[in-house]
Length: 135
Image 1 (cartoon, rainbow, N blue to C red):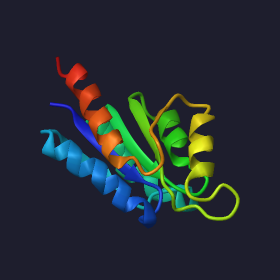
Image 2: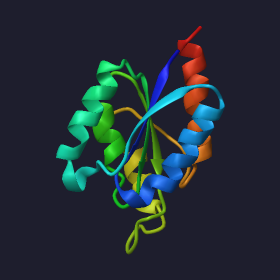
Image 3: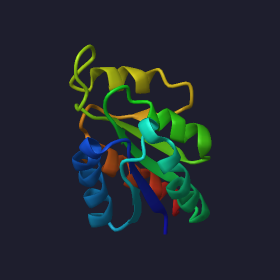
Image 4: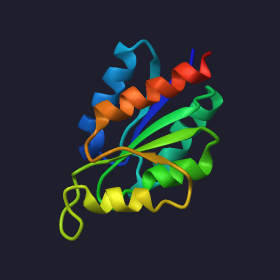
């Protein structure tokens, strides 16, 4: 059965990621999580992402606020589907998740993007994709 990766850029993105993770697990799929591994300390991403790749994770839910870079970065490093979840933790210009959303929508690497703080939607979408993979 497909295992789904759940990743956050920062600690303030965890509540949205947890919403996705709980939905995924309640709908019968296992998850691997890696929290607080964003671009401010990118070295923290490498080992957890390597583990996910080794465990054949094909779907990644990636939550990020501020500039929202992490989902596109993850998508450039994996073969699977990345679902970007912009989080309303940003402030200043483009605050409340707007900058993260716009960044994800403009990502060079192909990602799917859900609405700001939409952990539930990301979790359900990940499960729908997993069910297609598992057919």
